[in-house]
Image (cartoon, rainbow, N blue to C red; front, side, top):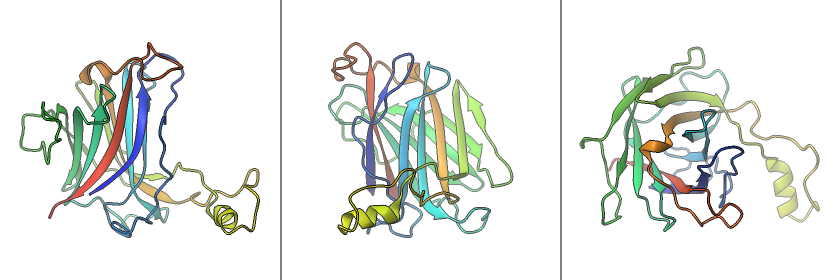
Length: 230
């Protein structure tokens, strides 16, 4: 199991500030998942173009060569889980789980984790809302929409900008800082993305008072995990 990227998605109207807490990008460098289909590169949570919705993006398997259709695919034994905390206690209240079956990505939830706040191993066999989308290829983009939710799964160019070589120079003491504009190490490489857009009405009210700059604006703490079937 891997847990990463704790973010705060602000549910107000207008410009959204995301990333109350941000953990650096992880591109196939975590020892437990290096080179595996369960490696999470980045996780994004932000308000949608429709301001009544929140968008969650989970990227896995970084540094994929562009144009590759056989180099990487979603693993049917790896469950991706988006955790959503509504009351700012940093314990998940809702989960959305996603897993591949044949040529499609299936989505379950959002569903409550229960009063004991221990989370769920799987909601696949429950009565959670079930949706699916055909997995896209580099040549064919597939999306799906149901009950106000929207879905996508497939390869996308890595959106994370990072000058890894210059970072190593700074860490080694060979440079005082980053160059402007620098070199994007991940430019031209792909990730596998799973995207779900959810109406805020499905999530329930977020916590207020947690953000001192916007105390009346509800927020949701959210993070993602990958779980491999044993």
